[in-house]
Length: 146
Image (cartoon, rainbow, N blue to C red):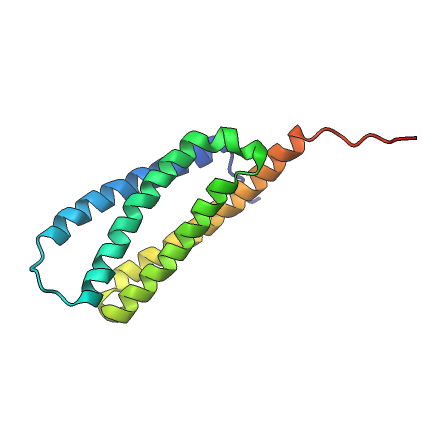
């Protein structure tokens, strides 16, 4: 039997993902600020893009957690877009890391991105299902006109 997420479990996921994203961003900002200046531009892009994206998406996930109940009956369009954006960002991260640092050096980041992609795709499917169920409950039944 497959596990089915509930609204409550999605709120927990969004909060944890948001919190981890923001904390990871702050931690990485501290680490990157210690690097020597004058690194090549492609290295700087490969370092800064994921950090800033994680921070922004982390805040987005926390906001999604707060807005989930209100948006499910209307289709949760904003949350779906956030999850799709998260997938796009992870794909860009993978391309930057592999292209700039290589697969050998960036192996752990690539594995993390793969796991993140799978989890995000699962959350997107769960939000789609829950929003469809919530919308079905709010739509009045069709009336037959004679």
